[in-house]
Length: 560
Image 1: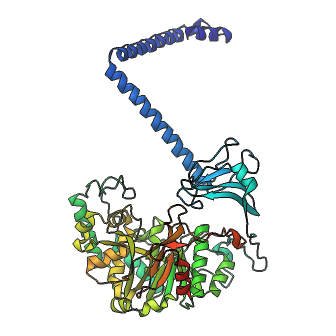
Image 2 (image 1 turned 90 degrees about the vertical axis):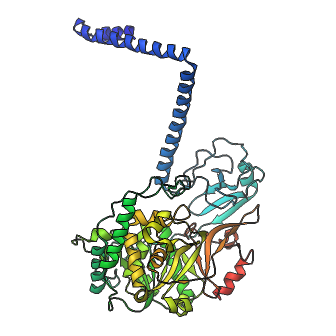
Image 3 (image 1 turned 30 degrees about the vertical axis):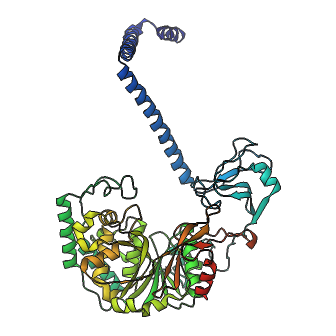
């Protein structure tokens, strides 16, 4: 090292004035050499230390590899789900084998963030896993070959694409409607709609007054410390590990709940009126397609109830789409218009995640009697009959059960009482409420929703996320009875090619008589990627746990 330094100095004319620096280099070199020799001696004479150092080096390498994988995965996720250009052509197979993440060949790809499984080399066989050969893909068609399930024979995609291609033609893309002054993508801003007939509908002054009074009663964030560990993951669930909220935190949350119940406004008699359906939409393509399908399904089923479609701030359809929605009896609303930016109490009602939107839309829609539906929920029959059902007329509400057993954390009972401990859970893809009859529970649910950082983890766990148990917990805490559909959900999806089982993507919910009413497509939103011909169309609903392969007949009978 010192020879290199001397040579460097000679080449660049560094003279004797650098002698002090030379001594520093020399001392540093000797120190490093001594330290290295000391470590070597210790490792050579202490086998235990050597084994520990070796184990530490292995762990460091493993952690580093996981970190690199996580970072690259995050980058791929931000890029979106795309099919990139092939890195090389292996005969008729440009992309190689796309591995599925389950035993159905057309389930989501194993690499969900990006379909980018270009063949590294040609002439290779696939594994025995499920998936298909992606032969080619462009704007007009997608070509695949040999879709297969788990445990099947490996395939060579070059040969399969050449001998047994399956060609799926794509629908032509919608063009721009020049006469309407808008685009098929609904890219117009709200300001561009101001001089047109169809715009976002504003809430009434009475509704905004209710919003302001409830926001004031909610107060500041609870400010309590939750137990360590996320309830989204079975292996870090704080309830599973027996971790609990501190006694002080439980006491504080109980105090705030009781204070809200005392200060929250009573039901406003003239703020809400009539019956209607409320759906929360979004600008993301998966939400756009979903709510269009949901609204068309309502009208196909003969439902004439008005629909309110709510959007987060900065999202929403353009003028042309609003006009088309109006033809379907649907008005468009923005959460932004509910809150006064100058009101200091509005921060208490701020929404920090998408799970919070539904209860806010339910509460502050202009309807007194509301059917709240997820945007990916497709009705089979006119749901207006639910307002005439016995559970609804007796209780002013109808909720539906989920697949899972009760999953609340023990601290929920410490805060809201033992009545909140149930043997079952609830599915919030649809609920029917009369605000006048259920106002005390609805406003408490709104309080819990506003403080989601505490009540979401307490009410659900890795079996579900978000607001799904909030309304039921409010009913149970207050001792207010609520209507409950007695027929549980059916597990609906495609048939597993190898095990003849249901690979679920949808929940079928029933009316009060057990007749199928809703198909909640909660795993894989409805999208616009539909083949142009039926020959390459794969039915989403092929089989269910209750009805088996007769499912299609059951759906057709229910839908008339």
